[in-house]
Length: 361
Ligand SMILES: Cc1ncc(COP(=O)(O)O)c(C=O)c1O
Image (cartoon, rainbow, N blue to C red; front, side, top):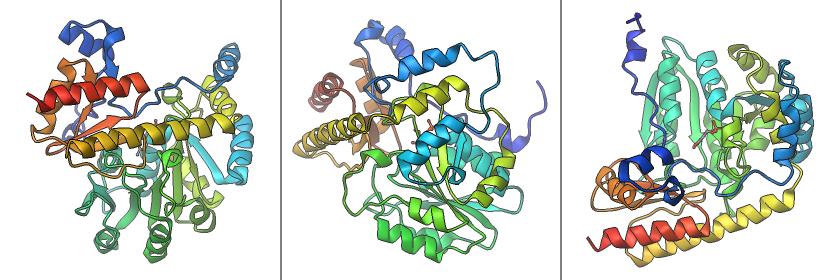
């Protein structure tokens, strides 16, 4: 066994949602009958024209990809209405989180974030040899911004704000985010992870991109993995001030987004109507799932994302096992809380059918 850094050896490995094949083999069902609602993926395929664009790019893969991602930068710059030098791309937003953590971390530093929240903040912080300071969500499963502000220390180099928060789906409204970034010392980077931005319907929510365009210590993260349905291509991006991006980019190896992924992401940005259609379909299905949870008197949050967070008395691990036995993969979280992704109409029906069977056990 090679010698591994003891602090790395102590990290629990990232546990992805269980795969369809694994569950199918376990319970003796055909893979086609299994419904996977554990990883917040899109129930729809890529946007129209994306497969064709990606297929064409396959012919170019004997060469390294464009490390300046010129076509994607131009397309996204137009889509967001921000200059190209405000954009930084990576292998998924998790790739960027890792580079950020190593660029600002190291012994003698700390990172602050809410808990429960996206597990990669914890893993990236530990890998960067930085101390993780976790601030519990409040009783409404929402970020406790005062608590987070109070937890900042002179050695805090980064604070992560997940908005909407994974796994709870709760949001912090735009004014609160602005007041929060105002209160953070300028040597501390504020990373606002908006992976689920496109699903939000709460009118008081606002993107933090305007903050990221005027403050060197604010960065907004987004991804093509969710509403754009490109999770397998691994494309995420950050919006920030060019000088900050230039420094953070030093922690990133070259060529982290291949040309097939670049072509797929670029083509995804052409169809605003499709984006809107998907946003509305998700909101309607999420509303329906939450209405059933309310009807069954099950505690749940007001999720603004493409998943729903709810509690079952059985306990999360046991309850998720009961769903799996019925061919429905959901994600157990802590206590009795579970997270289920908003799927297609048929997938949601299967989830609700399994839920009702479990409630009558
Ligand atoms: C809050 C949050 N940020 C980032 C990601 C990762 O996105 P990507 O696929 O771009 O790495 C996820 C994925 O589930 C997430 O929940």
